[in-house]
Image 1: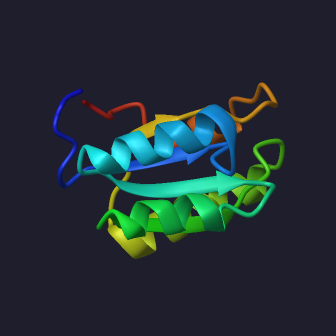
Image 2: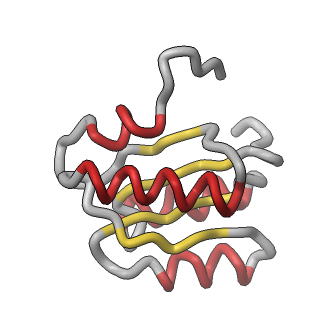
Image 3: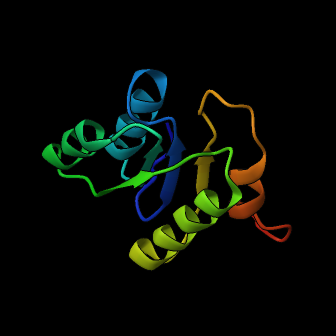
Length: 107
């Protein structure tokens, strides 16, 4: 995997399973991670921080636009940027992508 140092990645559905694995993997490669889920992501964040990474636990319902907007705002407040989105949550939704990915985003 590419070095993700200095990058910020949001992972939806990060409380367990593949989402948790994605979040931990991205952090191991240097990304600051926002772990979002309707379930608590405390275990995911603890694992990332135990390995020296930075992470933010966010309650996120990808089916709710306001929840996605709050997650994006919290990410920008904490880390100042959004570089990657792993839209892993079980609900098929474009809301988080619409909120996080700008038309002029490059990368």
